[in-house]
Amino acid sequence: MSKIIKTGLLSFGLSGKVFHAPFVNEHKGFELTAVVERSKKVIKDLYPTVISYNNIDEILADSNIDLIIVNTPNNTHYNFAVKALQAKKHVLMEKPFAITSKEAKELYNIAVENNCSILAYQNRRFDSDYLSVKKVLESGDLGDVVEAHIRFDRYKTEIGPKVAKETASIPGSGITYDLGSHIVDAAISLFGNPISWHKKKGYYRENTQVDDFMSASIEFPNNVHVQVTTSMLVPNPQPAFVIHGTKGTYVKQRINLQEEQLMQGMQITDENYGIEPKGNEGTLTIAVNAMEKKIVKITSEPATYMHIFEAVYQTIINGKQYPITKAQIIKQLEILED
Image (tube, rainbow, N blue to C red; front, side, top):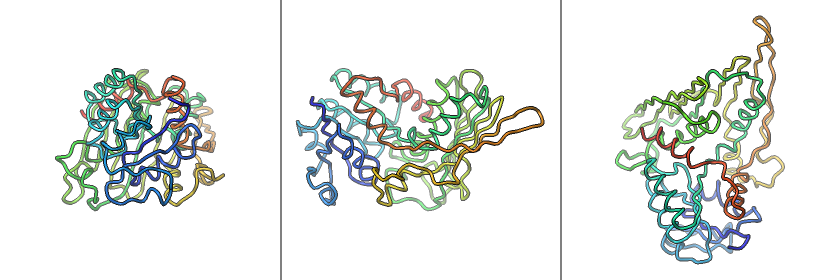
């Protein structure tokens, strides 16, 4: 393989246009070579040199392509990844990585058998709110963590138009696999390998076939208790992260900044891309003593999903350890499938 990773996208809908193509196109180590467009052919309006294939088999037959990004509906992830790996392509897998931990283990084994990498795209690790929490935890200002609450809330009472997300008979439908994969990944990446967990799902929207609420209590080493919750019915979204430690508390609202900026057409090279507006700072409360507390506003570092593509590049080209590990993905799926 050359030092340029020639890349194919399996879909050019929202995720392809917003979360993948701009970064592949901008990173000097990648070339956006081809996409699959089954009906509407729009890729050339934005990227004139990119090939538009009609189906998966056509793009996998392109011997020039080194990396396939699987960004199709959840229930197709496993089968498409198998086909890509067997075609000797590296794979970047959208969340959820698979529907079951068994499928995930099989995919990692198939990748090894074909001398390819299969890598998980958990982009929310590169959001400003998550990076803010990670920075505070690493500072030690909270002392020993006692408990954490991680949320991802939305308010949508109607049944959405995407059949794969709203149909009970389709594997990987519902909020558990949609937003739940983000918050479970956040818990595992921040606090380590879970010891035990207990999960509940709810069905509250009128006529819903799939879960629109999920909450899990997860126990981690060092007696750390984490509650992850996601819901489609929260008109007033709660903080994304609330972390309590023996010396302090940190509270951070979720700000879906990069997605919003990209959907509004902002270029990832814009000087304001990934920079939280003032007023979105996290709040760190430090206990000076039993009676006195110190309040500190924490400004988030600039964030960009380019970091995940750089990690993909370094793994494929230079053999570096990918930050989202096989063990983390398998444990995430054990919780989601339970």
